[in-house]
Image 1 (cartoon, rainbow, N blue to C red):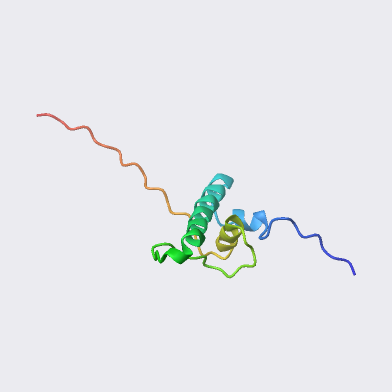
Image 2 (image 1 turned 90 degrees about the vertical axis):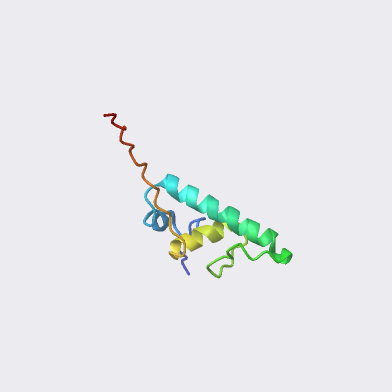
Length: 93
């Protein structure tokens, strides 16, 4: 039986890039969420309720893989950057 060759990354990178603006924003979003998931697992027995658990059921054990699966499932999205407001110079009368 012929099997299709699965890529090492699941979900595929193309699917992830459709959900963000650039590769940089994908890496930043995934890394930030992976740190949150790792922190959640490290403090699981401490009774701290301020951390958000993983939003998808996954067989992956690594926080980065779980964060990629959350991005692919549209559970997390990049927050829009606040635009810098231009200050108007004060006029003296």
